[in-house]
Image (cartoon, rainbow, N blue to C red; front, side, top):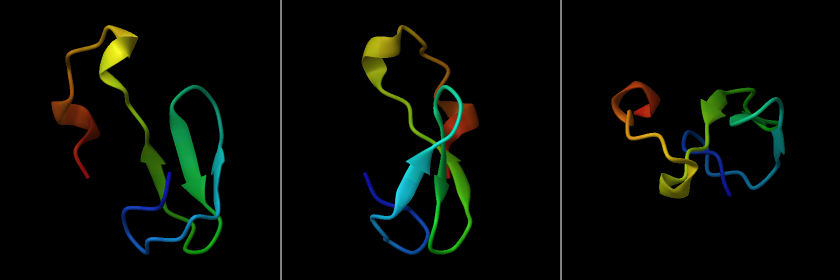
Length: 45
């Protein structure tokens, strides 16, 4: 998994699907289709 903003591989998982990049500080959400959720629009970067 890498940061969609800067491409760094230094990311840490916070709570649930929340992931923070240690390089640029961006917080993004990592969602997989097998979670059962089909509401992907709110996770678009």
